[in-house]
Length: 338
Image (cartoon, rainbow, N blue to C red; front, top):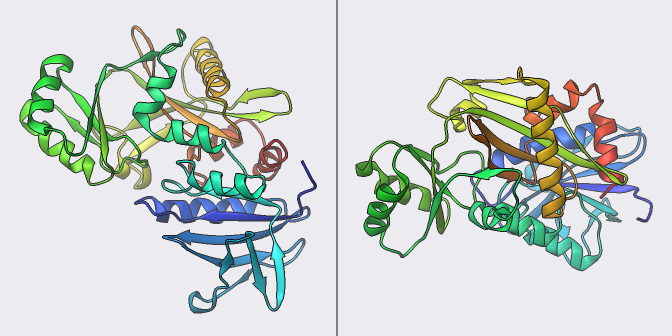
């Protein structure tokens, strides 16, 4: 990789997660090594890409009022600031949801030849869709998958619901296949509630996955590449006051995120090993978080997060701190291994 001097942190998104993505992006930008890189913060939403702020090496952060934010030139991914054209050497993608998590933004940077954080366009597209990702992984023998059913908008919801009730039983989780932060997700305990839950999930996307509920400990673990090695961070156990780890539990303080997880070392090692193996199987890059249920009959894969939350209260920063690492050093490792 060529020497990186100027980094663009791209945040916001076209999805319901855009505000969370802004917080993640601002936190990430603030932790990138100010002695090594110039850092530019870009808010990208519905085709409008604007420079929010920048911080040159060993300098103060400069912000622009909303009405005077310079526009990004998408032809070569540059910006003109006070008459000077700035071209970015590297993109740190912190968009949760579309287009930053489903491969579209990655494809743009790959066509321009600009290195970026995280997974390739192909891997991002596969991993972002929950049903596609599970289908891609079903052949592995070191983790389990909850029985599921898939429906696309336009299909008969009532007929599908009747079939799911007979095949999966209850409870089930109804999820949009391409969303995050628990938007559009419902826990359904009876057949009568299933059609409305599916239609609610359709409000977030055109396809829905219904998964059989699995009882067990909810665990999450992240992995990243450091040179030739894939390394796992400490495991977190999530204990929620709510029915499940929904948006309210995630962002309004109704859960405990125990890090490191208070589980036997053998279980932690197993989760870390599965995470590294899935990371390699999918062909991931950057820092990626995997979510699981540890049930009586084994470990069940839930989903992969190729652009996990990166606020000070998010899961990955907690894992980094629990590992005894400095966040700035960790981000430099991610950047250098992209």
